Amino acid sequence: MKAVRRELEESERWTAEERQTWRDARIRAVVRGAYERSPYYRRAMDAAGVSPLDIRGAADIVRLPLLSKDSIRAHGEEMLTAPAPQPGWRHGHTSGTTGSPLSLWYDRETCVINEAVDRRQKRWGGMADRDWIGVLLGRVIVPIDQAGPPFWRVNRVHRQVWFSSFHMTDATLGAYATEIERRNLQFLEGYPSTLFILAQFLLRRNTKLSLSAVFSSSETLHRVQAETIETAFGCKVFDFYGHAERAVFATECEFHDGKHLAEEYGYTEVVDGAGQPVKPGELGYLVGTSLHNLAMPMIRYRTGDISAIRVETCRCGRTLPRIDSVTTKAEDIVVTADGRIVSPSILTHPFKPFPQIAKSQLVQDRVDHLLVKIVPTRELTDAHRTALVDELRKRLGSGMQIELQLVEDIPPEPSGKFRWIISRVEHPTHFSWT
Image 1 (tube, one colour):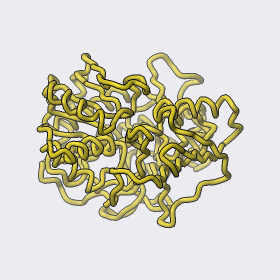
Image 2: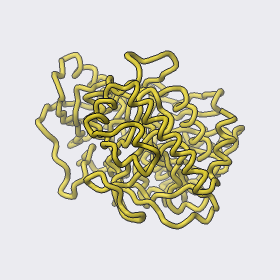
Image 3: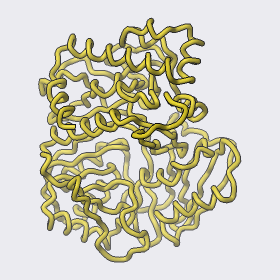
Image 4: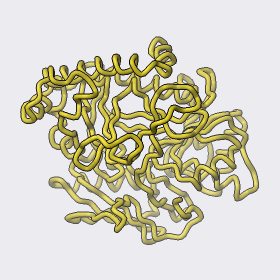
């Protein structure tokens, strides 16, 4: 890990020629390995009339077909480069923001580079290895029915204090703030929505916490959220973009002017609806190719997110290219009858184990009622339904009535965007997403 991190310190200032030489060699290795060992990629490349020898680097990769989420769902096992997962491989899922998670596998090298790039982002934000960080993400930290503090647990190995994202109410958030202050935590990481909830609480009480940096990810960071978070914590937000498919990673530097693509991590294209590259500066779909994962290769994976590649060099002097802000989805927030405010990203976790679900949507029409619309891909048994409701109730509490409704489809909004959570309940976190 230390060696990889040292390499990243050098590569962030490589010349364009150095980066191209390294990147093209990695692309050749990934494409060759996928063709030789993955039944899916051999079939896809043969059907496209493309040989691994035709792909000499980034300039040729457009000849390969795009990889869609539907293809991963349908052919995930065939994408593996071995008949079965191998020792050392790690299993993962996407967050499933449309309620239809993907099942994924990573080799050890992918896990190492992911950790190293994440640590580089923290270093850009001023965080040293010895520093502790508070984390407000989606894991269940303490029992959902726990009424009093502590609502946190300590990971001493990684110097983390994990705070529960399921107990955030006006009655409990004071304990969160007190614990952050007591431990003199200078860094926080979380979803924009969970960080925003804590920041709003502080400002409603005319108080602040003095931190060095805040790191946000997994949701679109809206301007109003960033301003509120930076005011409450007296520091800048370093927003970063990544996904469980491990194909694209982009991070903010100290100038907060676009996000630097970690080109040592993956090769990123911006394409139009037909999969053809757009000109630099033009908006298009982000497409990523992992430069490391030889367990389940991700080659030309279309993320569904929209951005543009910047033309000019960043003032920081790093030569890693930048992308504009990434357009994903703006979600509402679920509230519970006992006053807890629950982040959208947290509620994706119960859907992860269910490939039987193609699409879902959560509609809260009352403070004690949540309608879960589901488009199934195949039979959703009573056991599946019970397990899903149980996992949602763990996060929302026994006071929430959860109703499942099977539907043929869930159409997007008139704007073309898909809203995974629709809240019709008035609560303090409703605001204009601008």
